[in-house]
Amino acid sequence: MRAAVLTWALVGLFLVEEASSKCPTIKRRPQDTNCNYYCRNEADNGWEEGFLLDGQTCNYETSNDGECRDGICYKASV
Image (cartoon, rainbow, N blue to C red):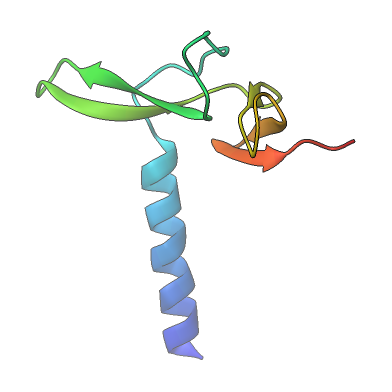
């Protein structure tokens, strides 16, 4: 039981770390086909991952047939 609780705590910590991106959440630009993008991290000249706003269209199987939710492209509801 303790191992399961510890595992879920570590997974939760990882998800919080991933969610704290330094890139702004943006609307879709013409060049975006997925729900994530990368921006420059000025502090260390590296890269950070950012996400499109929920509800923006994305390419799931074909052009614009998906919808962004929490940084992931899902098949759009019909």
